[in-house]
Image 1: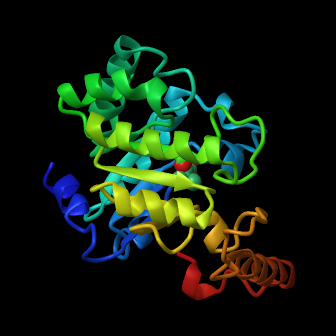
Image 2 (image 1 turned 30 degrees about the vertical axis):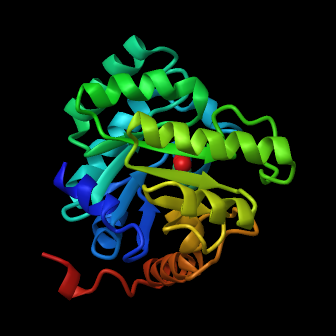
Length: 256
Ligand code: KIV
């Protein structure tokens, strides 16, 4: 709860840094620089090449989160509840408890607005910290076009952000929404907004780490590639291959 409060208190003070992790080694590296490490259900497309995050199961989220937990020492660790695991308050509570008891994460995230308000209230009543997610909702999206162009859609997303705040979420991910709407939401609500493709007006930013380090082929306007790890892995593998073929590896130094 202390870490959750610290995130809330960052509103209007300092920007929140959030990245995804699906395993211990990446988690341990990014943990040093992040406020929040998210085990996102984006792991379905990034690691398993699923066409939709709908195919991600509770067990997959739990297994990856157990690994991530080993690497995360400092940041708030949030785990996505996958599709079809929070269709009603009872189901959501049982599955959220399962995620928390098995992974020891600090909070869970779920997608949606008005439809999930009762679910969120039930979780929070049971002392489970919840992060919201509005805008493009990959678990139910039929297309991935940015949101907030039309007035009706803008009003719905703004209304939903207020409903989620009232329900008690400690922050909201805004995915692919128009900049001025992200600005309006961020000004209106008193909890932090964390944007992905939602402009610099948000209180923080999240990206999928594999996109940021160049390990994933994802091309989207909101992704900035900060590194090319694929190239480095390629080079290392090629050098290893050459050394094996030419007999340069292993030397005495690497033998017993
Ligand atoms: O699943 C995920 O990684 C996410 C982030 C992109 C916010 O929800």
